Image (cartoon, rainbow, N blue to C red; front, side, top):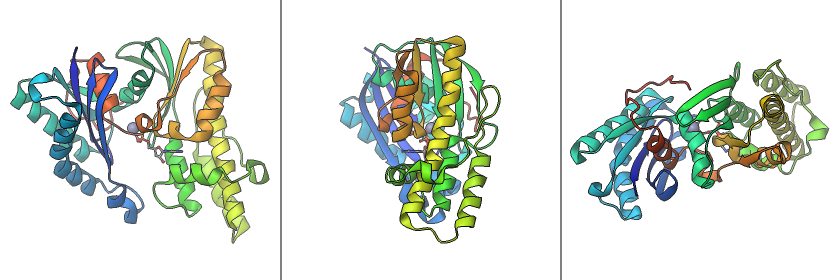
Length: 324
Ligand code: KG4
Ligand code: ZN
């Protein structure tokens, strides 16, 4: 049995987890900084980094206690090294390296994007590469193939906004405040996408683009002037439908093109109800689909521990623009 302590601080969640053998979550404490950033309408990097630094030691203690482990029981520490906000990453890596030195344990750096894929392995015990992944978060909309552990090949990505970013901006236009994605998800459930349908972005190949859709929503809102609650819900539903259809159209095309026995849809946007439902329909019985439960879709340290366990030996050097 091997125990990994994971640390995630790439953006506005401070999270520490203990994971057994890269598969079983013994503890996964997630502190969201939402209240800290809400008044600013988005994450303030300086505030985020300071808050990580203040909270991380207590959260490490809390996670160890919850998992019932002592430092001597640990086999590995895994810390997110990028992509993310540089100050936030430095806090996580600094604390992780400090603890590893104090406890004489190895420490490995983890690519946050890899982490999102490994989240799926925490919810599907026998899931192994090769697999096809759709990673949709606040900063990424990437279609990747994972031929083996620790190896990823990008098939397509977004040319402009990421899906989560598009949801957040649309939510702001609709007066939903921050964070927008989950609020838009809720509002869209009471709307009818057909009454306010918006264009579905479509680029050739496997690339995404969401900035045109965002502009279409902006112009629609300007054209409508004052909108009542039902119209706002209809617009939210139409926007959501366009994003989801666009994401899944490319996923289906890759499946048609090269096939895969395993498909993973993950990242914060994979918490979206419509995306979860439609992904199941689109994949059907062509492959096995794994979408992690909500708490493992959004940022968390259990996925970092799982990825670190399988890809041990990666550098810990912070790289805010790290890619696949
Ligand atoms: O993976 P994540 O927690 O952080 C990044 O690595 O970026 O993703 C955060 C993104 C945000 O844009 C948020 O609005 C979006 O995921 N999100 C959602 C939902 N829950 C979170 N978007 C749509 N529907 C949701 N239910
Ligand atoms: Zn993330």
